[in-house]
Image (cartoon, rainbow, N blue to C red; front, side):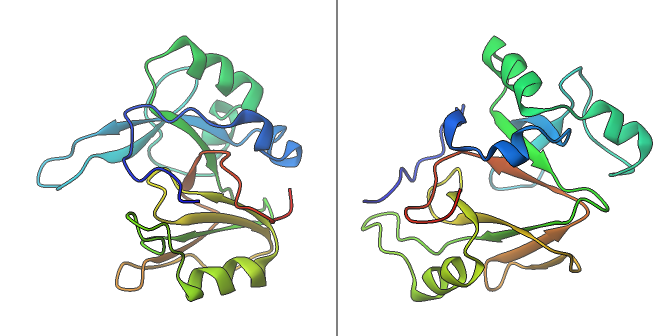
Length: 174
């Protein structure tokens, strides 16, 4: 069955589907949809739970102090005013985020063979992206950050953040 393809103004995570091993890490933040001049669609802009936009030295002492556990971020999210929650990748955290875009047909729900192979090869926590047209995968490891809009693939390590939906990909490990 296809996941929703319209991105709502608020994306409430399926909290119970978020792995406990990620939830306890102090790597969580909030985000809002915000329009940027000249951009065709709004961006997902990260904020710290105690206020202030996340900019500058990702992984710095100041950045790490301002990130929170999922429990703390959830309470802030539930008070309202946010579009969603996110997980920040940090230097030394041992995690890689793989973001595959445009791999699910919004009308039929058909998943590309490429995405199915990537999810199978990673055999790790995987969820639908907020749009429902792609997937986010978090695996243990270390690599360099890479991005290709041409093929709809981003690999994050030690920086950036994922929006988190908790809409688990069927059959993938917790």
